[in-house]
Amino acid sequence: MPRRTATMLASTLMLIALLCAGVFIPVPYAEMSPGPTVNTLGEHDGEPVLQISGRKTYPTEGKLNMTTVRVTSADYRMNLVEAVYGWLAHDNKIVPHDTLYPNGKTEEESTQENAEEFTQSQESAKVAALKELDVPVKSWVVVSTVVKGSPAEGKLHAGDVIKAVDGKAVKKPADVADLVTKHQPGENVVFTIVPAKEQAAARKEKRPARTENVTITTRTSNDAGEKRAIVGISAGTDHTFPFTIDIKLADVGGPSAGLMFALGIYDKLTPGSLAGGAFVAGTGTIDDNGKVGPIGGIEMKTVGARAKGAEYFLTPADNCAAAAKDTPDGLTLVKVGTIDDALDALEDIRSGDTDALPSCKAS
Image (cartoon, rainbow, N blue to C red; front, side, top):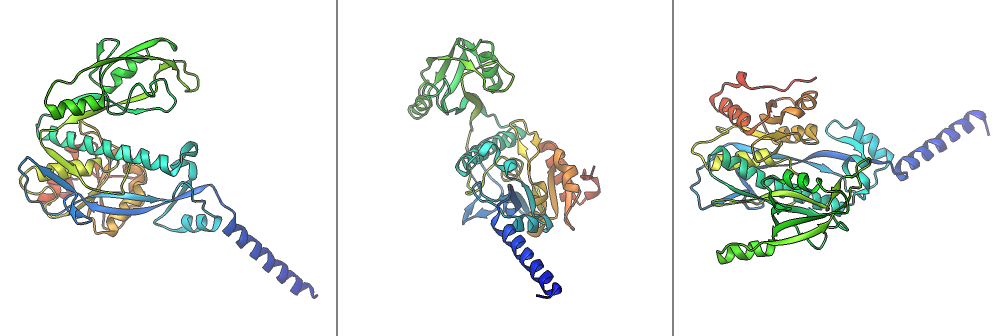
């Protein structure tokens, strides 16, 4: 065989081998891409996203869209060709698989965690909006989750109201951890609780809820380098609202829609329109006091928002630098750190005084 022919054949075979390797050999990466964006003032799957009853609401106009990110599933194994294509694609982002699913987290575990965060974000959005409107909200500390195999398993349950620890009243979730860690591992700690079922029954029957004491033996934390006492729960906050606010949005998880839900609730409960007819999108976690926190996938969210027609994007302050590195044409990034910042920015948008908007700048 002539040398030139042999060289070409060898090169072709090598190329085929590389292509096969690229297609069949998995790589430890996952993909993020722009997901759906939904108007919190509008409808989704034929019903209003925000449904408020027991309180006067007002007509709205414009859009206050929450944004999402699509990610590949936990069990999907990307090949090299897909990874290279994703790296070259402008609107997608390739990240290490462990970034999205740390410690071997399964798809089911990730979905459950996202669902819990989404539920909590809805509660915080309601509280933040009502506080902004000076509407009183009753709050109390509850068991959010119980770690499987922990001392608390079978003794405490999600939704149990924590009234006291060792006889000392708790007013916020951090109080629970502070009181438990005063013990040495192996010591007993006494929780005064209202079980979740008793709380529900007392509400239904309109009577005071009965408390009970639960004794739990602490154990040593599994955290490296720490020997603090734990019982294996996380504490959170539950609320009672003076009227009903339902958020109807399926197949969405995580806490990042909190800000936009809060603004949507505020808009429906006040005369006039926050957006003034403009298309405003945004993202950001929110706590009960209206503080806006950073989220993941900001670049994907700005792309998805602009593709749907958004003109302005409310951006958490801690995400501003990343978002400003590659802002889609025609989209104005607005820096916000609290719900008050967002309301002020929307006022500027309504009035047309957009030069006053706090902008995001690349670092």
